[in-house]
Length: 300
Ligand SMILES: Nc1ncnc2c1ncn2[C@@H]1O[C@H](COP(=O)(O)OP(=O)(O)OP(=O)(O)O)[C@@H](O)[C@H]1O
Ligand SMILES: [Mg+2]
Image 1 (cartoon, rainbow, N blue to C red):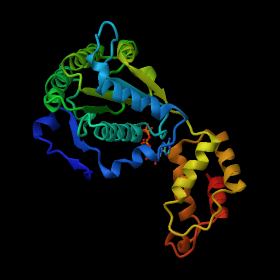
Image 2 (image 1 turned 90 degrees about the vertical axis):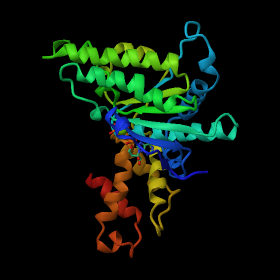
Image 3 (image 1 turned 60 degrees about the vertical axis):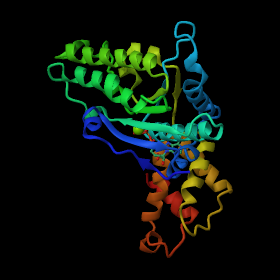
């Protein structure tokens, strides 16, 4: 198994809006799957969708069973969309390797902000270059490729939304370029799967949403999930003496669940507890206890 190995990113790729190329599986990426807690069934569906798209699904008729290879993760900030998208690609790479279907997955990160601005049709041309040249370049040998478009509303903003904008024409053209691009890649490079994320689904163009093969909505964690996340974060600390199976942790989680706190904030509470209980605690010469955690939760 390889460690994370980034491909050499050529200036042309960077200019085309690709901000990272990573060869998966990679050791450091397993936790991006294992440590993201989702409701039952979510991960299984996502993994199967990706495997279907990278495997048998793409040999089928695109009229009979139209599969675009487009997975959308939607949800508020801090619910694990970006991390899970990485983890999903890594998990799929492991599965494909283990089953002898492929040696891994090439992971491509798109940075919408790196694309040219919406000036004078620049962004439309930039998007066309990304989908018609840069992504096909990465996918040319037929090996599985996963492309992450984080915060897709930045790239394919709803045309309905922008209709009252000062300069809607260019935004429309950019969104149309994304649609054309998605269709082109789906047709010409069935070895490519897109994973898009958004915390603003209303702003994503309807025709893009219509091309989505599977949508998973992630929300704030349940009380049980909060317990699991707190335990996981606490396991990072060297010498906690806390009773991680006790009722107190459960009742803290119940309180947090009532507030609809996001998972990122749940983990940050452990950090806050660590830095609010004195220097000894911060420097590790005193162990964190349940009172520290309770105080941090009450103060937040
Ligand atoms: N469902 C979850 N289970 C466990 N930890 C989580 C979960 N969601 C988020 N986290 C924690 O929060 C961190 C940030 O999550 P991530 O950036 O993936 O969220 P996001 O949904 O992409 O947020 P944003 O919309 O702000 O980009 C993760 O690395 C992890 O530590
Ligand atoms: Mg994110």
